[in-house]
Length: 70
Image (cartoon, rainbow, N blue to C red; front, side, top):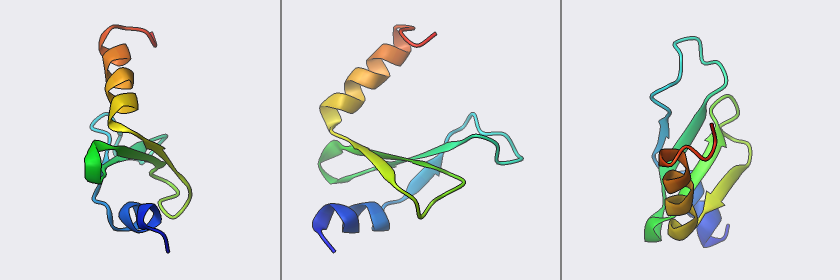
């Protein structure tokens, strides 16, 4: 198992605060060493995860705050 795979497998995942009680369409996010983030489907926690560098994550959060995705 490579280092990134190990980091993702042992990460502490948090479900979105916008998730409903029925588990609907939710994502989970994990902070990874070095400031990166992992994002995965909460209904499929053993499935694939998207990995973002700290710079990519900051750009995404900035876009959300600026309303780029409305």
